[in-house]
Length: 447
Image (cartoon, rainbow, N blue to C red; front, side, top):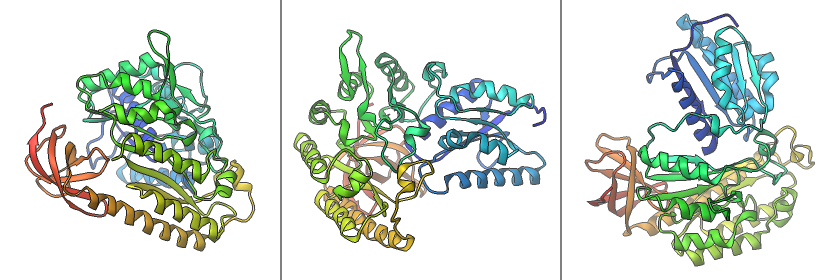
């Protein structure tokens, strides 16, 4: 790289999970602490950070494609941007990215992005650098204070995974499970609320594996943290994702029935309805134990909306085993769900398994699965018509004068009313679509 001027504008492009969104926000704050401002919409940025995800197939090649587009557009404009690759692809492919993409000046993994500012200083001097360490020093303590936020905010409480599902790269790219300290989380949550957040979503690869000690030295699980955050007067809503069935506790189940601010929504991935496939995936639950867990949540909070993750076409999956997945979908009646075709990730045990399912078979199974999931989501929305609930307004809708907010059950609700971002309104749900509802404004709720 040649010596260059310090960048004045930046753009962070985040892919994948909500934890990547959180990481992207924190990197943006790091850059703004150095006096770099967001590039205006539609204008090229001096510095582009590609905050990558390594979960899906061809993730690495998509990164190179993005790099190529940035180089081409920069050449046409007469000035190529500085490029940083962050996130899980950076962790997995660090040195290879540097070899294949000379335009990239910085490669930084998800456990080292707090060092992005120092790497940028070196990049300005013409030095290329890679940092994919998983340092022992506290990443979060090195990040700047949270800036003004939207009415909804993410808060990472736990990172990494010790479960080693055979299809998953997370243990290799995010490292072992770690929990952020209790006092640090309570402090950051309070600052988010002071900055305008009214809903906080607690994040983790296995968020319900979080544990810590309170100020009195008492050991707490995620439910204890939720109960403490619920004491913040101006915080109106709490959510959490993503949970693992193995880490569900009685306290967490009870919290859904006892903590008013904890929203009636649970994302609990099952992945398959076949016990043989679950064992091959190294999942610790069975279809029966998973269903019994959901029964306990519903007993604590009867109106809870359920969400899950599914993988179709795992190596060796038979038609009968796929039918077992459809059976569990039909038994649960998910309000929302995410479904994917299996894609082999290099270095994972499943990638070396035999009897990979043909692409056309996976395609057909995914379509059938999504038909069942879409049917149930629409049914859940239709069953919500006539309910009265509070909606937190998050953004403008697609049409002029339209506003979008979320129901307690994480449904998108549209209004044609004079509102503002951050408003909480009492509304009646009057019409259901497959993926959203229309609301009728009843009254404004005091902030």
